[in-house]
Image (tube, rainbow, N blue to C red; front, side, top):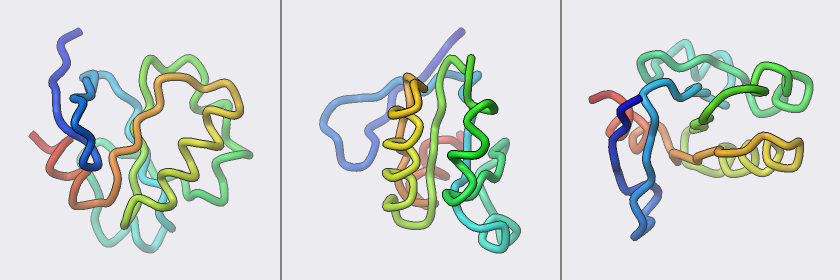
Length: 101
């Protein structure tokens, strides 16, 4: 698979986002309905723990929210449940710039 490199969340280190990444918007359903990133699925932060099975076996998971705070929490929850290769794409604007190429 071909990936592309982008700086995420002000990091000086480039992060490779795989073309088959599982892209997850962790905002509320209402926020998601108002617009999101192309190809993203909506799993609100409050539902992450109960839906861990959806993340298992994914080569890469990219999470984002409105500002980057909820996605940071989602990343932590996923990693503490054994999900590896999770990328926090930050807020919606950052995620759109990164993923809508």
